[in-house]
Amino acid sequence: MAHITPPRDSAHASWLRHWPPGLPLDLHVPATTVHDNLEVSARRYPDLDCLIFCGTRLTYAEVRQNVESLAGFLQKRLGLARGERVLLCLQNSPQFVIGYYGILRSDAVVVPVNPMSKAFEIEHLARDTGARIAVVARDMVPVIGPLVEAGLIERILVADYADHVAPDFDLPLPFAARPDQTPLPDRMIAWGDALSAHEQAGPSVAGPDDLAILPYTSGTTGNPKGCMHTHRTVMITLVGGESWVHAAAGAVNLATLPFFHVTGMQNSMNIPIYAACTLVIMPRWDRRTAAELVRRHKVERWRMIATMAIDLVNDPDFDSYDLSSLQYIGGGGAPMPEPVAARLREKTGLAYIEGYGLSEAMAATHINPTHRPKPRCLGIPVWGVDCRILDVDTGTFLADGEVGEIVMDAPQVFKGYWQNPEATEAAFIDISGKRFFRSGDIGYRDEDGYFFIVDRSKRMINAAGFKVWPSEVEALMLRHPAIAEACIVSVPDERRGEGVKALVVARGDRQTLSAQELSDWCHANMASYKCPRHFEFIDALPRSSTGKVLWRELQAREWEGR
Image (tube, rainbow, N blue to C red; front, side):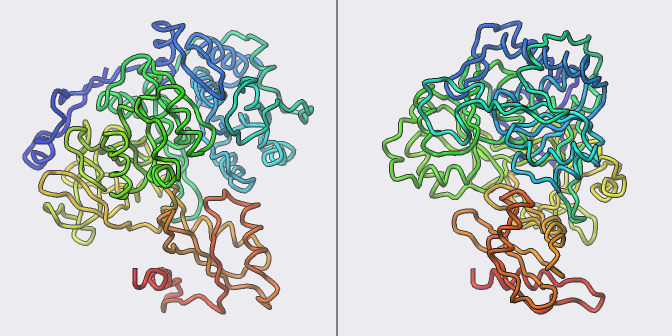
């Protein structure tokens, strides 16, 4: 068992003054694996509903049995070995949960993939991880099929979301309500066939320090990088998150955050399963469906992002919705606008509890105290997190109120970028015998020890909570034969906070390349949230004397007068 405490020296006294009353300063984290959490909850509460999805209910015993069957199939039929990486590409669904825990139960490593990804993006993940097996939804077969034909991926398990839709389910669905009976191509296996084989998994031999999750985050190099997380680093934020806002067994959670992202993975899936809660799963965001599910299932806990809250409160029928069962709401990803938080508070009587985390830290490193939250605030550091504000020019720590880069030393910080030692080295800085992770976020700490973001040092666009990395989008756009150069910048967007704009230098006569053609191409070749919504054709990109694109100048032009 790991014993984790917050730093207690004078440099951290300010935030400890506002530590939640009654919450121990020490966190005891079991020295177990993530899939053990499902095993424990299923033994203790076998008949409790674990998952509710489109009118179908699965108990903890049923989910556990499916996980065991899937793990057995992966091991016995597909030869999956300890430490192998497996791509998991699904929307929120029972199959995602079962696939995730089944891969871990096989002592393998989950590589979560955004289900909006295109072939170029999945190809990079497959090549980088060496994954030979993938678990995908049927609608991804046309996207990932060419990778199988090319021999990059050997075998694919294919799931139909519709398998878990109750016949009388009466809310809108983002997929066909009936299972697709179309025969699958060679080397693809139907999910149901895998489970019905009832193969027995071997004893689990993975330990706390085995690699468990490899979430990918993009960076300034243009290619996404895999964050190496062990069972231990996942367990630290998982146990800490549950301890910060405790939930009783059977508490009903609404899962609207995507499971493939670490925030949704931890807060909307892993933490509820650790606490033996019930997950009401939404495959894709729809404000009216979300409100009805809260009413119908008496949802008590709901993690969301600001964009979802904005959409919800702007619904003309918002005042008529029954949200009276809610006991906790919170989230992160982007600061919550105060007018929106106020409307939620008027409606529910609850404060929206904001937090802060990164893929490199497996979700939260900071959370607002529930008894004393501050608006548009990251919160205070949780157990074991030594967070400072760094002067990037001098390499020294700054005092309260001074603005610099947010850096942290914490036990949940990742073990490095997969097969990328140079990027790993660049992500850390050694100061006074400690190795601090450089977040790339610019912020400050106030006199109470609460942290705030004011800017970002990296070229990241925050579009409705989704991180869009300009260099990655630029690299993808340069695959278009008519594009000579491209520069991606953010633009103001009233609904999404920031939008994505492409400044394009076309090859030859630019009149032959239209914005609509380019938009269509982007949507066919990258996830939709990355796609530019605005295009501007220019003769040349401005450059410095050393040949670097002056993207800051182009960026500043878009935000003048804001």
